[in-house]
Length: 111
Image (cartoon, rainbow, N blue to C red; front, top):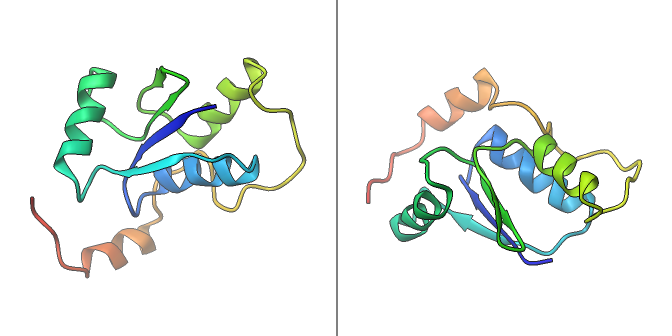
């Protein structure tokens, strides 16, 4: 499979997608949409919308998805086999209030 994941460096939803990729031992491109405006523009152009995460699997774009939705897509289409391994992060949740507070204390980077 060729997988391109358009993700934020720190985001509960993005961490959920990464956790699913790790759970199944998948190789994927982790594309930073926050620190690279060209990658963000590519995501918007390909997905037709501005929300993330977006995951492209073998040319099929899953737009504004959670890790849980990515996992369900891959299982439903026989791209991965079920396993009992636990994901390393919540797969269907935003950042916690504590994570948002920590992020707010860090400098903001503008393009």
